[in-house]
Image (cartoon, rainbow, N blue to C red; front, side, top):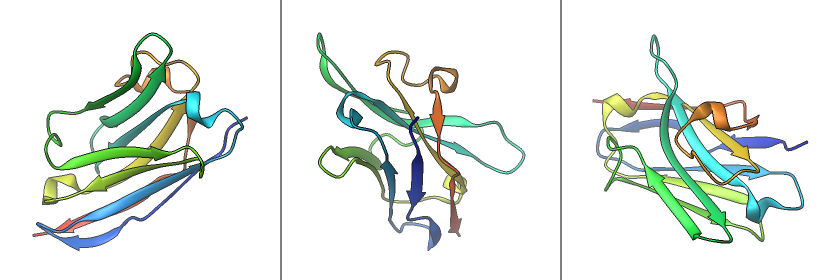
Length: 127
């Protein structure tokens, strides 16, 4: 069983930055696929970013088009933590952000391919 705990959400003005953290339990964290998803009020959950590792492809990072160039994702395997650095935030980035994990490295943008989920952290970007 893997437990995920997100932190770092809050209220920020447009153009500002936030860094979300997701701390994971589990002894094989470095091999997990880790993703960030978000859900805005009245909308479906959507993919934001993911980082994964596979023996045949090494590290792989993917971003949604809406956040490319503004968000970065990274992981610290020693701390069992994945980060989402969000810069140049826009009001449309307002959502609850969820961290997700799975032991399979593929299909990183598909929420159905993640077994473990955190409780979410709220990000509000004011205009």
